[in-house]
Structures are given as C-alpha cells and as structure tokens.
Length: 126
Image (cartoon, rainbow, N blue to C red):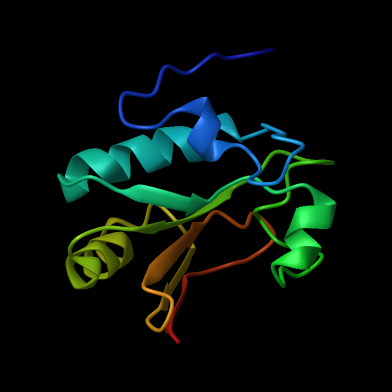
C-alpha cells in the first residue's frame, strides 16, 4: 500500500539526497512524526540533510547503518537547524517522536532519527 503524505512545511526537494542523484525515498511514518514535531516546535526548520544515497552518505561520514540512507530502504532521519536549537532539542526529547536525537553543537544542527532496530531513546550533545 502506498500512502502519499502532503506535508505543509517540507518539500520533496529538501528531503531528497543532496548529491546529483536527488534520490527521494522517505518513510511515511517518519514524515508524519516530522510534521507533528514542526507543529509543536512552531518555528521554521531548515533541513540540512535528509535522505542520502549510499555514495553521498559515505562522502559525508555517515555510517553504513545510517537512518539517512534512502537507496535500499526508506530514510528515517533528518538533520536540521532553526533559530532556537536549545528549544528544539528539549522539545524533541520531551515529545518522544524520535528515538535518535543528537545535537551537533559545533555544526549548529540537530539530528532526528527513527531507528527501528534500537530500543529506547538515544540523546546526545556533541
């Protein structure tokens, strides 16, 4: 069954691989959670990375099991920035919409992931 989700705050282009391949293969449940998080956050989010093909994932230092990978499976992760990362990080932890929440403070981005192979919540500030 295919479900086409209309997202109010995100475009297919910004969720596609950032390399020339432009692969788009995002998990629908993840997108519903992402849109819900955006409503709760109530401020614009700039997606810096979403789905990634294997080649692009490797070029940016992503691990082989990255939730960003969208070539052989549906991607379940995004990296983003916004005007108040402290608020975004705290809300992401409280909502429990994602089980991977990593704030890369030096890069000024937050990673939100839904890793179905992982039990429990993984939060970190790097």
